[in-house]
Amino acid sequence: MEQLLTANIASSMYWLGRYLQRLEGMLFEINRAYDLIIDVDNKAGTALYKKFNINLKYVSAADFLHKAIRGKHTANLGEMMLQARENAIISRAYIDSVAFGEIIALNDMFQTLQTKRSHIDGNDLDKALSLILIIWGAHAHRGHRKSSDYFFKLGKLVEEVDLRLRLDKEKAMTELILKEINVAIKMLNPELNIFDNCPKEYIDELPYAMMECIYATIDKLIIEE
Image (cartoon, rainbow, N blue to C red; front, side, top):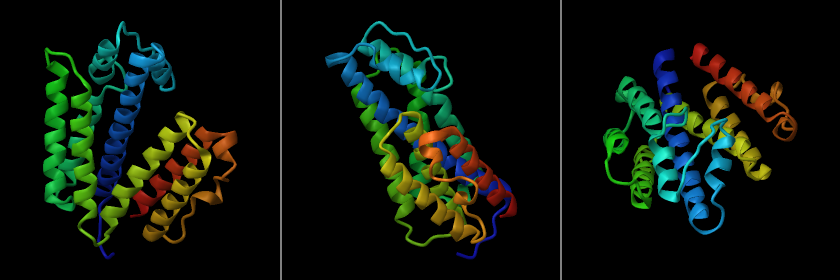
């Protein structure tokens, strides 16, 4: 795993993983809320975005998709994708060529959706999710693992934990992902351990304190790298 990274590249790979996972996680939740709005609960979208401190108002399922994808709020998916693209460009030399191409295609898709005159529908969500799966798969297909790959993986895992804690997902799986995070951190620096200052009890008692502990460990890892 010999590979010298600047702090800038390590940070870019980490944030690329985070933004892509954030995008994927939000797409799944938006799709789920969309189905609920149509069939069961018209307020499902409002409840979802409340967990991100966003007051999302809409008049129909179609309007929900419009507001979720391109609404003027902090969870705008087009803005997320722009951030992912910028980090991918910075760390281009460390990304699989197929994965990089799909990142650019995914960004083009979301920027088009920001100005699309027709209604956004479930097919748009499915296409975006398919592109993200290709990105994960193409990067993983490389087989070997370098420092840059572990930072990319860390970003993905950290964002997954963040989303799970926000949405109060099943705790056992969250604990497993935390262990994966710790393994990846130790591959980069055996002396670091997120559980030294972040007891697992934080998952139930202080979930945001758990995230702050993880962020502090990652910051130290990137600076020392």
